[in-house]
Length: 262
Image 1 (tube, rainbow, N blue to C red):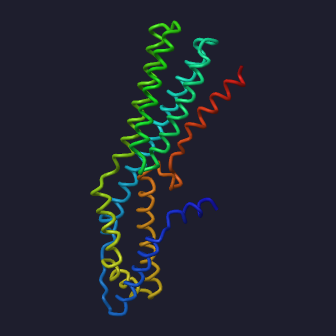
Image 2 (cartoon, helix red, strand yellow; image 1 turned 30 degrees about the vertical axis):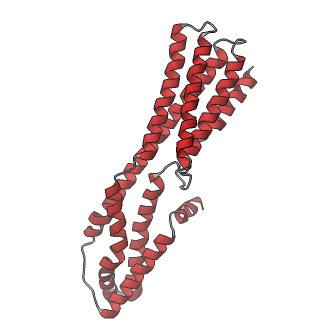
């Protein structure tokens, strides 16, 4: 049942329109006897190969984003543990403050990757969170933190910033735009160009079979394009394979588990 649900998730209005145009074009070609045989390899070279290449590139971007987000969470956890455990009894206020900052950072980051309208303001808030973490490190050093310990914390803050920038680049720089435009154009002229071929299939069997083959080709190709579109932006929370940016809940879990351990 889940497989059927996910399959219907990639079938949209565009899919139905291309299928309908393909069937309509096939019927018209059968009626006017416009039939010719086209090598099916042409479909693979002109449409399927570029789409599959784009899917592979988009999937690689998603996997890279998963790895980067895991490192962001790991660095945030390292900061939380350092402020909580390194000077027990002296850093309660700092520990609470770092939790507030990290929750704010994860909350703003999640909105940044989803909300296009307020992206500039959210980015300003995110960089302000890094500034507050840096100032917090200075206050921590005033409690007698050694140079090596301070270096570790500063490295965590820098790594957190660096990984966020990696995530931002994944969001802003997509798979080749020209290749995606090429695939879109060929998909939309597909019903016009290949309808005579499906009419040829119908002449060898039946009109129904010609329309069925045409409709199935259209469904296959547009579904592949929809899969690539869903994977293209793994942050928009619209596809089944999108990243779940649950950083705030992660920090809440860390603090709750720490309290239970005590």
